[in-house]
Image (cartoon, rainbow, N blue to C red):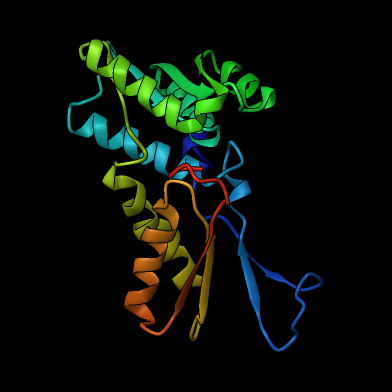
Length: 210
């Protein structure tokens, strides 16, 4: 039994891929991060960044959590902050889907939109501008530079994978946004299996986060 929904974050299942595997001589497993409360891996880092900020005294109830995001981290922060009793302002591009905006607003979170043409880069710049202008009002976890982004995956996601898989792992494949997952998990797997290949799936668009 869990005390609240936050305790269900992480420890997601590792599932063998059968029908979608084109090469039966290869075994493929998928880490089902969609089993996290808001449906994404970002729940892990959102919780850790908030808890770490609380422990270090950087986040107090009189501050508003502000974060630029393309969606999933914003949804995760909105959910976690709602449970913990914090105000949240999510800054995102107008190009982000209406569905994601609605999910964030459903937790009582304020959404500030930036020009679609600027993408997530524009949201990042706007959030940093607000923090610089009102430093006493805002706390920004800053998933793009927060060391606990990759450390969370190094200490939890990777450990879960290593615990469940016996024998050698030859490849680890991950999409990349902030790169926290691939850096954290990749580092831990490399320490265990030095010859492992880390494969990044990256969007074509030129923005550094898109």
